[in-house]
Length: 384
Length: 218
Image (cartoon, rainbow over all chains, first blue to last red; front, side, top):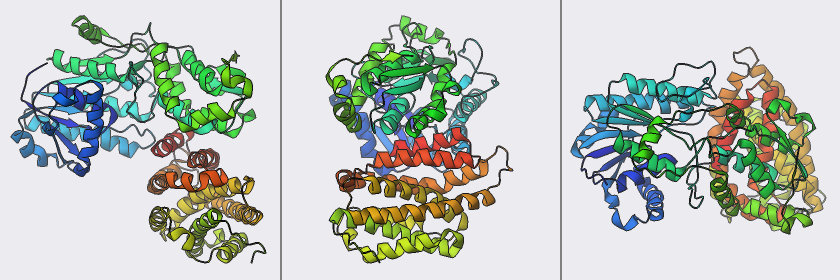
């Protein structure tokens, strides 16, 4: 463990990844962690989430949670109001994990991903902080051709969503600020590799499962249609994210951009993942695979299946792209001793099993809706 | 007046909630977009008033505070707000509720009859809503449908978020009685909203993103 009493300004600690980072920071030092919150009265709820993570790591008794100081989140353009607090707690680093993934809302994306980053960079410059760590995304390259490098990306011909464009723009702000920086780019985060526990909202693969639960568990369907290309899905377990993030923070003292992704040769394909879901949960007699949603005969489908396909279309479209992320810096961290659990079909199965077990709707579906022969026997799905 | 009385407690509770929302909608339509308040809606309100003239069935339940809060949130005399939130969002949700209860084997004949009337009123209003939306948001903007979607996201977001707080209570009160589950309601609602809004030129991708966020919060 690094021993330091320097303080950290952690923005976004109430979020999924920010919460994981908060628990990592608590375990990895002794300084104060200043956490701006929209509602500081909700500090106990934040601590409960972080405490659960520390429990999971067997660290809860060893950590002094009073090191985590909640302060009101300043309004845009008024972050100088934090200066006195940051100086008082010896803050010399900003860890910026806040952001919006609401790709339907360009105003919110600008406020949360670009304007907030600019405000925080001003703080870092004004107080001459040692470093700015920015949590970005592996997909900030947009639909780039070839290998996605650990450097700033030029504008691609096309972005998957406005979200990826806003994150790329924020990365440029970070680098252009002149503040020493570390940019961490995780891929699609899923549950813990050891027990499938997931503390985030249903994004990425969880959106697929969540919408399947919402739209398809109303009744049994013996024929289903899925868009599932045979490409590896760049998943990242949340424990690997935390380990990788903290290792990068410790190891890279110069400016760096670090991709956090599982090894491509270990990753399951989208088709394997979706088939796993349908074979284990939905259990149709026939499963029709397609590479693109344009190929699906939508007009002939019941409206729930059709809506489910539409709800998952953006993510499946992103998964159709061949993502090839440079892993030089992660390889350096692995070589330096980082334990990093790659996502495999087996570890994803753990996450899926946990999701299903925690869903009363899916449990009821498996108990009540499947045709009798399928309830106890292994399902044999005819893939078409 | 209906010739059959609804006596079941759960049914009276649901009707009381529906009456509250229908009465507010009728008042807002009357003040802002009169064409949305047709004969079928008047007739529905008369029947609801006859069955549940007071809030008594609601007052003693844990649903009263969130229902009242939602009703407060809905109060507006802004034409676009009424058109989008009442005319589009809540009429679609109402349609799903009326349809589910009408088809539920557990519903009494009187309840089914009322829900069928609700569906008639709903269909009548929705025809005018779509036309009014076409007039208010002509597809001349670039990208097409962006104005409608911007308005939908800005105006319905807070209401839908508040609606989510009702989810657990609705499941507790009506899950077993009618087979109404909030998750199912929202799934049906999302399917219908997609059809209506994309038909008016809204970008499917953005709309799905918005609905995903709303449904994930529930």
